[in-house]
Image (tube, rainbow, N blue to C red; front, side, top):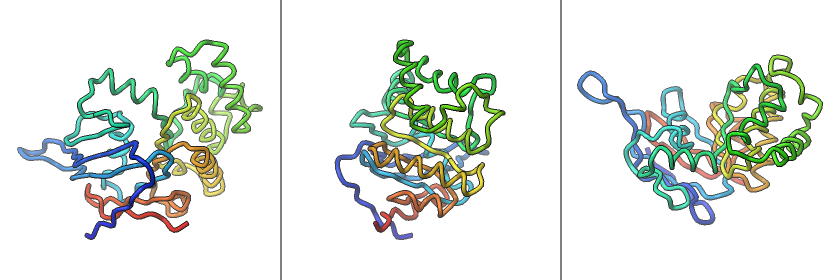
Length: 238
C-alpha cells in the first residue's frame, strides 16, 4: 500500500526507526509489528487505528516504554530508549508518560482522592505539594464533589474522568490512551475526548488507539496499521 508520510511541525520528540516486534512460534516467528518508522512532534495529537490484531496496542506499549523487547530504534528527545536499561526506561516513563486505559484501572479500595494521590506518592512528591496538585486537578476536571467516593460509586464516564485526571496529575509530556472511550456510551466518550482535546490545546502530546472514527476526528493525524505495517499516515484537514 502507498504510504503517505505526514510531516509534523517542529523537532521530533518521539522517533521510531524500523521498529519490529515478534514472538517465536513453531520454529519460526510471528510478527506483530513490521518496520515501523515514524516521528511525533511535541504537541501533536495522533490516532492509531487498524483492525484487531494489527499491532495497535503493542505499538502503544512500546511508545509508553512498557515493552522494551523489540528490534529497531526508539528515540525520546534524542535519548536511545532501545539502548536504555530497564531502570532508565522506567525513569523516562515515570517522568514523561501518562496512560489512560479502556477499563479505567482505578484502585477499587481507594477513594478518588487517593487514586489521584498515588502517582505523586510514587514520585516522592512532598505531601503538601501532593495535596495542592490533587486539589488543582479535582477542580480542573470538576470532580471535587467525588473526591471521597470509591470507583464503584461512580458511573463509567466519571471513572474515566478520574482516570484521565490521574494520567495527567504528574504533568506528563505525553498521554497515551488505549481505547479511552471503548467502555462508554458516546455522550460520555465525547466528554472524555473534549478533555483530551483541551489537554492537547494546552500543549500535551496525545497518542491514542481507537476503532471509532468519531474519536479519531478529535486528533490531527491518523496512522493506520494493517498486519503490523503502517498502511497510511495522514494529517487531518483543519
